Length: 199
Ligand code: 5GP
Image 1 (cartoon, rainbow, N blue to C red):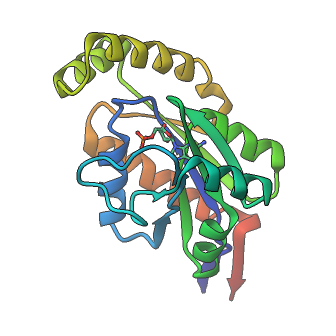
Image 2 (spheres, rainbow, N blue to C red):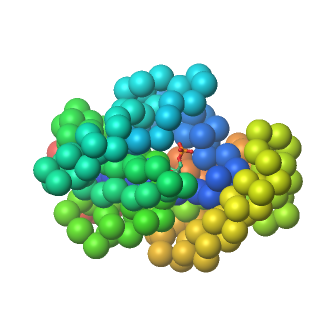
Image 3 (spheres, protein in one colour):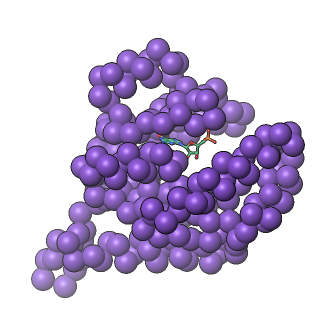
């Protein structure tokens, strides 16, 4: 007997400093037939980022144009920049038969839930505590005290909404968090309603 499942979306959200980027990188290295959707954004490209890989970088005019044309399944303003997931980005990947990770914020997850036109599972990445998060943000040493303080306020607001998600994974020990994420994905792939059983 072999199992295969209908591909679905995996929404992953985390406050800044929770280690989401590292978690996603390690998860992808496990080659689980997962792809990450590439969002559109109006924020400037950061050093080391690659256009079309990290984001599709567009200006505000183009973003609003796409928004009016109904090209985004969800979009949000984060830290004064626009971000959006296009239908094209996810449909192409789902069409390849892989499960698709959406690295989006809480606003985006809620919009997706309200639209209810895609099968998705949502996972919120938790820091071990706010103290640990503050420590991680300060140790990054890339942001001023004001920015760190603002990120902590935002983090608290997002953590207060974690209960809207199907799952919460604490990123304390990286290896354990990866095991938890992989277990969620495996279990969700085995949900009866997603299976095409060829017995
Ligand atoms: P960054 O600019 O640091 O890459 O991302 C900032 C925030 O925007 C993160 O929380 C990230 O999850 C979120 N984000 C990235 N792409 C999208 C998107 O397409 N839609 C929404 N709603 N949030 C996004």
